[in-house]
Amino acid sequence: MSAEGQVFREGEEKRTSETVAGFLSAIAIFMSLVGLAWHPIRLILPSLAIALVASGMGSGKGRLQFAAVLICALCFFFGLTIAVTLSKPLW
Figure 1 (tube, rainbow, N blue to C red):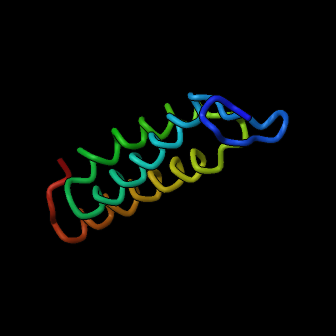
Figure 2 (cartoon, rainbow, N blue to C red):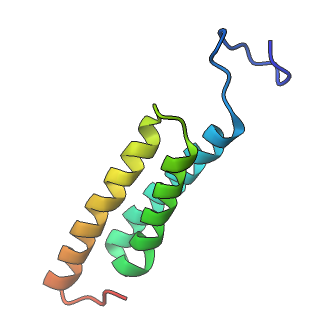
């Protein structure tokens, strides 16, 4: 049993950096989805940078970090497409 009272199987203890990487990935996904509706370059580019940092922090099997990078890249493409077609400001 770990110090926090959670039971992990042998070899499955989570590191603090993996937890922080998960939170950063969630923040990046939220920021990029908001960026679809409001100034895509201002929000989606920093969220893509946050997702890449989270991907570097996490372990090699981090599916949430991978999903965050993909979602941010797709939101960047679709955010710019939406802004250009509707004549909304990019910045």
